[in-house]
Length: 231
Image (cartoon, rainbow, N blue to C red; front, side, top):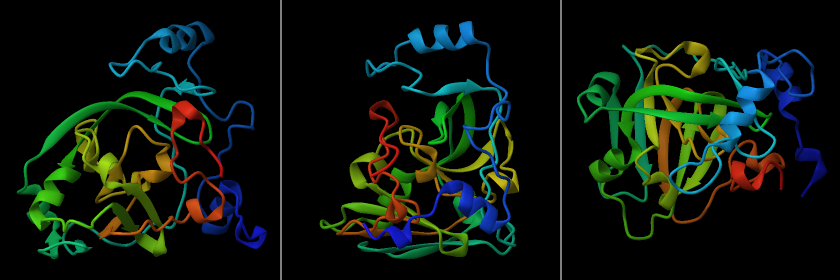
């Protein structure tokens, strides 16, 4: 990889004017007490994996990992869905709300080392969007297109999971702007940088297109249980 393209999350957050948080700074995260973490780490998911991935610490709130916030609001926001689809379309926020809505409870895992347990989200399954636009046979990847040119990418097989949604609500309230309002991706079983905030478009492609962090040295597969943090 070309070393000139590498950019740490800390450097990016400073550059973008976001909040700088780092797992290496003691006291930054409000961690659950040690014995609670031990108990949670002993729990097993339905898929047989431990609930807490290796080297993760359970925390008590969702952290703002920074980024460049757009000025969009639900009234003028639109989501463009395009690429390898039979029926490309653009949805308004109201049209998104008219699709089948779901509520899920899941754990989310940040590459910096924190895990938020039992977070509650509402929105639309990505599979619902895929059915709406009718994917072509060669569609193999989903590219989330967000504000300020940010992108992240996941395989179609990941996108079809029931817990992968486009989220507009968090714990029963409108999604806060720092966490991606009016709409963000939520891909709970991968590190959280895959769950792009401030969505503006979704592109389906035949070839993979590594996203912002993936093209700067972060893992393309981003599996927390394999600690796939960096390339």
